Length: 408
View (spheres, rainbow, N blue to C red):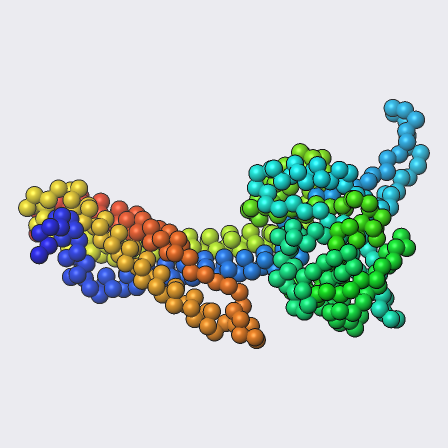
């Protein structure tokens, strides 16, 4: 029935079938290792994506601002002593000069998705006797919604901004005792005063952002902050969030403005993500080595047990290359079977994770997806691991002397 199969495959399948118990255990071991790799990789990816999504929910990938003003001492000449202690000057609200030109330059840079102007400054929100400090943010709603998903985070009212509208966080609304449709008075330190209508309440998942941020139309903020036609920053999103720092450095070099990426402003968080990735890689490597050692040990035992059969094959004319291929095929088949069984087991574990590990409202703790590409990668890795583990036993089998092997 198997005459269509090459000789090496027939011998390899027969050896695997004769040692059913050994084959079963090593396939289960390989499957367990692959399941650990696939499950942990999917879990870590989902957890990191969730952490990044929450951290970047209320901020841009890159914020471009005017350079900080620096006070420099006056010197009488070269080599003279400095006669005065120069203190750092108070920073005032600065507008990016000709921000439209800089925005156009940044938009054309590789890796940049969205560039939108923002006018941000301090203000006071007044409602009756309540007086709270807020961060006033003037935005262009359509473009800003592609940087921060504010429209998707509206929990009451709607994301609508006209010249007399404002959108605030749920915590700020609670502290002021207001809701959608109420009037809210905003006063800036410069003395500008305006009464706006609350059109929406948002929940960004951050208490600080929910009780501090107030969003108005860009031109409304420009009037309140005395920035006619100006913008205090350009918010930028990029294609690759982990390449944001490289893009920020290119922006600084190109336009001469200060560009801070989320990686720089959240350095400890980024270090924690990197540590998680390294730990996951070490675990996967350790599991892969364990699989390789397990397959190699079983095949070494198989060479000893099948030495007589190997001697007979060599006496019947099988070349050393063919004998070596027999054991390489066994290693590859064991790795391949283990990878598919392990991927199926990982899929079951991920389904159980989504089913049992949930938030109080029934939603998953975070989204974990079963990536088919990860299965293919695991199958290729396990097969190659099996082949690599079989090299030493295969070479040992190919070097057996036929006469000594038959004598035992």
